[in-house]
Length: 348
Ligand code: 5AD
Ligand code: SF4
Image (tube, rainbow, N blue to C red; front, side, top):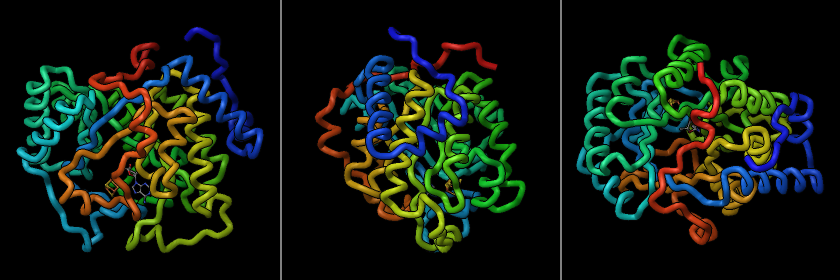
C-alpha cells in the first residue's frame, strides 16, 4: 500500500459510515473508490460461475433451492457439461472459475467434485483459479478438494449475529452457527483463501448488525467477500415475512445499503477481493456496476449451461447478463487475481 490507510475503525465509526446519506454517503463512496484504486487497482477480475448442482440438504428459510421446496427440479451437471463450461472459461480467458452447489455431503458428490478438480487442474495446467462454494463439509473433504487443486473457498456466514442467524435458519443441528464458524476456521487452517459474506436487508436486521458483519469480516481476517441484498424468494418461509417497520424494507434502501457495505468494507479491508454479486442486479440494472465503482473488484459471470440456469433460483428475478459498462472496463483477462490479502498476516 503506497499510502497509510486507517483501517482500525471502531463500531461507532462504522455505524456512522453505514448510516450516512447524501453528500456524506457520496464522500464514503469516493473514499472507497480511491482506496480501491490505490491498493488493489482498477482491474476487474473474472470468475466464471458454474452452478454444478441445486441438490441441497439444508433448509435455510430464505433460499429458493432449500430442501423442502418441492417445486424445484433438481439437477447435477454431467462431467461433460462441467468440462465444456471450463473450456469456455479457458477460451474466453476468464482467469478463474467458481464451482458452486447446494450443500451435499454424500460420498458420491464428494468423489465427483474431487475427480472434476483433478481434471480441471490438468486441463488448465494449474493456471486457472479454482474457487469452491459447496457449503459445510468435513475437514477431510475440504482437505481432499484442496489437494485435488482447489485453493479458494466461499462460505458465507449469512448473518454474523448468532441471534439473527437463528431467525433465518431452522433451529437444528444442521443449521448451527458455531459449526459454520468452525468450517471457516478449518478452511483457513488447510490453506484455502477464505471468503465469506452476508445478506443485506434481512427482516429484523439493523444497521448495528451490519456494522458487526463488517467487524466480523475484519476479525476473521477473510481474504474475499461476496455479499448482496436479501431478495424474497417465492415459496420460502422468510418471503412471507413482511417487516414494514424495518429501515431496510424497500428495495431502494436495500440496494443503497448494499453499496454502502461494499464501500465500507473496502475502506476497512483495503486489500481483499470483493465481489459485485448477482443479487445486486436483481434490485436495479445499475447495481453490479455501482458496486464495482464503489469498491468491488471481482465479477462472476455465469457460465453454467443455460438450460440449467432456470433451476438454480436462490431468489427471484435472478439475472445472468453482464452490464456492458462492466465489459468496457479494464478486465484482467487470463489472470487468476488472487487476493492480495492472502498470506499478508500470520494466520491461525
Ligand atoms: N436473497 C439473497 N441471497 C440469497 N442467497 C440464498 N438465498 C438468497 C436470497 N433469498 C445467497 C446466500 C448463499 C448464496 C449462495 O446465495 O447468501 O450463501
Ligand atoms: Fe442450501 Fe445454500 Fe440454499 Fe442454504 S443457502 S438452502 S445451504 S443452497
